[in-house]
Structure formats: structure tokens, C-alpha cells
Image (cartoon, rainbow, N blue to C red; front, side, top):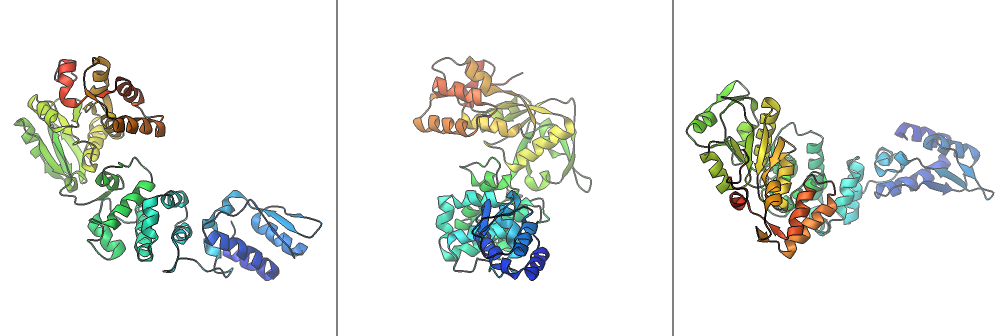
Length: 408
């Protein structure tokens, strides 16, 4: 590494190298990678040796006196020069008059290690339009740096509410509850990776452990379970409701405090159900189940993970035989072992006229998704759906499978 002390000492011995290093530092300050090789003139052999020592390479001198120095890959990154700007007399960019490119360049220096995330955001037209307005740049940088803090686990909280983050980052608890800043936070979180749901901002934020309200977010479960929370608090109401044929709604605040779960009676796999009406049928039939309500919320995923890790349970998934249904099944598989997906069997058993004709937009969306995710675990099922040109809603599974759409 090129450290501040090493650079200061090298300049003290050969002051002529300072403008050479400053030129490189200005490039880094602009967020640009250094070239693989740079050149300089007017350097004596002592100055050449100082540069060779700093960069850890052997330079070459041509007949006209020009010196060429190679730059190893790690030292080409702008973030490696962050601590050297002061000693080289290069000012950090990022005052209120910066253009939008300087916002990304400055953040590359301030938050090393997230250069690719910033490059992805810089290519997003919605982001670029937002930061093109000078008044938006400071709050946008605060959002990005705050997201970095969450990624690094620096908030000290397991769950982060939009109100708390708005207060922490922007001094306004209402700033992220709605509006343009909330939308920008969603785009930033999406760029950090993970399977963001392009049509559901709530799920995108929850993937990053950001929630609106820990009491309004919940999971509906029908199972003979007793929850043991921290502090040895026992919640047996899910079990009591189960005994009476009723499902229980558990808020995320309670799910996040679960230390263990007791299962009353013989263990069995769960049914996970995407849609409300079929879930009602499952409850009437007395089968332990969890309602995902479409794509699973954070509360759903946390409860399934605990049931899987503590009790070793798996699940049989009931959901639509379409792209979203298979994406939901794949998402559930990250938290509990999915033993069977009813939609897969339905597509294998379906006759030519079963289901609903795919629209052009539905077909295009499915093909685009497969192109972007060639290793998708249910790719064959989606391709089968596309070849049929029809998708099948969960409510009609019974007429195709002959058992109400449930696997025994």
C-alpha cells in the first residue's frame, strides 16, 4: 500500500515526484481508475527509484529521458488514494456545486469497497435525474452512506424503521415514509444486491432489514406452536387458536424476539400458501400452514427460517403456476426446504386448454427474467409454461390435480 507516511518521506527525498503523484491523485479524486502505466519526464534516477519503491514495480527509462512506471491493480482503485489527497495538495470534491458525476466520485473515496454499487447507481437514469439537482445531492449522499452503514452492521439495530432512519440520516422522521427520498432509498438498496422485487418497494426494503412499522408487518400462521421470546416470555395463542381451527397473526416485533418454538404433537411439514382463498381451505382441512400473501414478507421469512432450523420442518408450496409463483417458491427455499411445489405438478398434468392465456407482456417478462437468471431453479417450469402459452391460477389446481390442489 502507498501510505501517507511513505509518500511524505519519498517527497522529502525527491520533491520532484510530488506533481507526478498529484496528477494521479487528481484522477483518483474524480473517481477514475489509474492507468496500468503512467509516464513522467524530468526525473533523475533517484526520483525514479522513489516512484518504483512506492509502486512496487521496476520502471523503464527511454532514450528521451521519459520514465514509465507500471501500476499494480490494487493501486489503480480510486479508494486507495483517499488518504493521500491532503499530503499531495489535492482537494476532495463534493461541495454544494459539484456535478452529479462528482457525487459518485466523492462517495467512492468516502466509502471504499462500494465502487461497483455506485457505478450501477450512476447508470440508473432515475438516480441521475435526481442528483442532477444541486439541492438533492447532500440528502442523496446521506442515504447512500446510511445504507453502507446498515450493510456493515453499524446501526446497532437488527431492524431499522423508516422513521428512525429518516431521523438519523436526515434529521426528519417523516422524510423516508413516502416521496422522492423514499424512492431513492429503494433504488440504492436494490443496487446493493439481493433479489429486489421491482414492483414492490416494501419487499425491497425488507430485504435490507428496513421496515415501515414492526407492528403492522406480520405473518399469518396455522400451526400447533408455542413461541418462546427473549426473557422467557411464552406466547401460546397460536397453539390455542390452532386447536379451535383458527389461524394466528404474529407481528414482526414478536417474530424478531423468538428464541425457540415448541411444537405440540407430532411434527409434520408445513403448507406454504401464496393466496388467501386456498389458504382458507388448508386451514379448514386442519393442515399446519403459513400464508405468504404473495411474495413473503420479512416476518414470513423469519418464522419459516426458525421453524426449519429449530424443528427441521420443510414445506409443500401452493402458489400460482406463473413466473411470480415460481419466484416465490424459490425465495421460500432460502429459508425452509421446499419439498414439493404444486405448480410444477400442475403444469405437468395440465391439458392444452387449462389455464389463462399469457399476455405478450407476461411472456416477455418471463423470457427476460430467464435470460438474466439462467441458473433459476424453476427455469424448466417457466419454460414449460411459456411453451404452453398459458399460466394457471392456484384456485383452479383442484380441478387439474383432483385433490383440491394439495399434496398429501
